[in-house]
Length: 261
Image 1 (cartoon, one colour):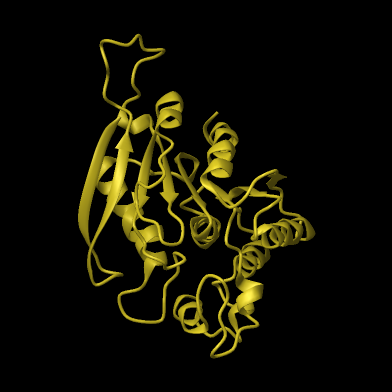
Image 2 (cartoon, rainbow, N blue to C red):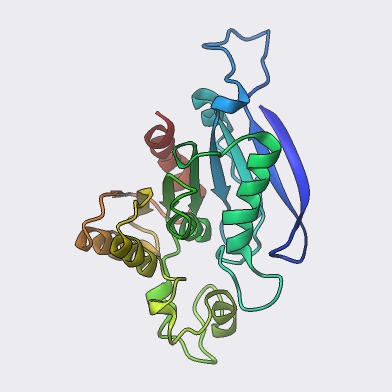
């Protein structure tokens, strides 16, 4: 695997930002290859989103990328929920869903079509993956959320001075906007689903999973139930597990074949 660390100017963030990238196009002569390395033009691409408090590269399914032959793009997006925040320079949805995709297309010739461009994340990154794919369905063909932080209905009840185990009211307002209106806003994945269905547009394929001991389980169940109520086909799985790397590592062994198999 060829490993890149790239710094670029991001207009949406009004500054330079970095991302990391893996491309499985280097060839080892000391290990028998199952097949020849794919040319760049044939590689599918996975945008991999980190969780709350995380950063690019803190979880990389490198063996699976080698096995299935796909590139991985890993942005660092702070604790932004991958949304366009209220303040200047915090437009992380635009960074990941537009500018980063355009940069990868123009620089590496990857992610040209939705059927070659997928997105996945865990926890906050799971929310980001599902929301970003629904915000840009003509860019991303598949999305997977592992233990996704689907908190919209919870934070909609918060008032100034409130907080939960993750953050306070002011943080959520910066990320999601007016919390009194968040359930009807485009920062709610359910709103995006309804708008796409009303327009008759194709939705990305979605894979959602969560551990039965995870504190985010009910939000994932509720989102799956919502998709069913709207007639949206998707994969939903839950099984023994907590909100931890053990569950995500087990889950990605199922998600990657679903995406790239």
